[in-house]
Image: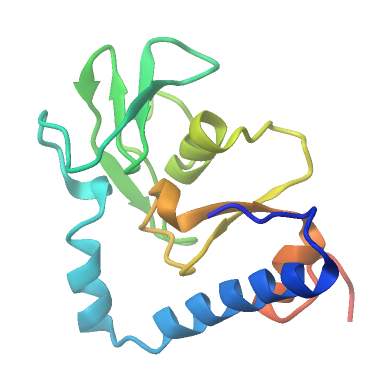
Length: 157
C-alpha cells in the first residue's frame, strides 16, 4: 500500500483511517490466529524455491544481496536464515557477520525507495514485525505514524 499525499484532505484522512482499521483488525486476532498467519511469512521459509508471487531485487547498497518482496534475503545466491531479535520482535539476519539491519529495513530500502535519513518511518500495517512483506510495509511521516498509532511520536507528555 502507498499513501497518496496529493489527495484532498478528506481522501487522505480516509487512507489514514483505513490504516488504523487494519491495525485494529489484526490486534483482535488471538495468538493462535496470528501464529497461523505467520506460517505464510517468508522469514522462516528457507526453501531455495521462490514463494508464490515472490520477486527478487538487488539490494541497492550491495549487489551481493538480493531482497525479496516476501521478506527473504539471499547473500551470494543463498537464502539466509533469520532470527527474532526478541525485544522489538523484528527479524535480523542470523549470520551476524552479514548486514546489521532489520529485515523490514532491507525490504523498504529495496522495494519502497526508503533512504537512510529521509525522515520517513517504516510502518508495519498490521503492527506484526514478523511480516516483512511489501504488502505489510508503508513509509509514513512521523505525524502520520503518530495518527495511526493514536499518539504523538517524539512528543513529551
